[in-house]
Image (cartoon, rainbow, N blue to C red; front, side, top):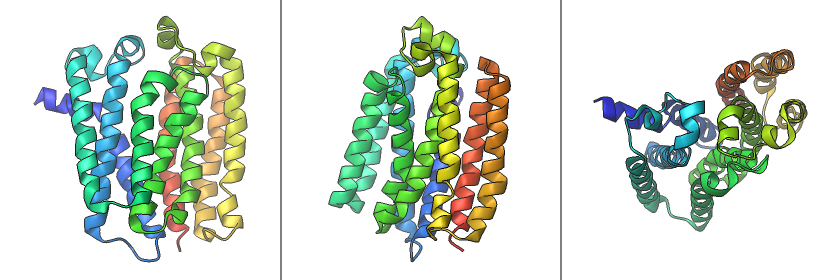
Length: 279
């Protein structure tokens, strides 16, 4: 039972829950809510690919996680590196099999792109300054493009894709600021290690400011309605102001870890704003 729980932890349950919520929200953006069979297939694919990507990430980060994430299953000795890799492969296969009933050229392109990025992220991109952050943010944002494609209108997935990309890009840089000690020990070339914590923090300021302005665009273009704007200001924009203030006051690893979790939670309110924007 303990081992089973370790594998579930490796898949990142909160990420899986967030993915399911994103798929539901994307469904509400369609002119007609998708059939539940299609929705469940989409959830199966996203969960399988997400879990596979996280397991593969843990496989490559086994040494770094001994410092940065000692509570994860591999550093704790609950799962071996070999089994983590096998688990990742099995999940990739399961996700691909789930996609067969939904086959379309557009969907194939999206899934192949996601698969390539998920596999190569930890191998080539993760330790490169900013590029690695952009790649993982692109992967996370693609959930909306995937969902909108499955539901029949990929265009409706573009605005939430852009917003999700921006939100996750900021969070990924903050996570790199948190992980400086472990990344440095393994010779990583993340943004704060290559250019310094201060430059990384200024990049976060810039991207957050752009995101806060960008979040207003869907309302200004009448893509989402007044409830989107109201929820956005109260539950997203104001918390982001607090986030900037806190990061400016304290950029320690401990506070960056707290702010990373804070951003992860605030993403749900962004999804809520998108959902309410339909009305």
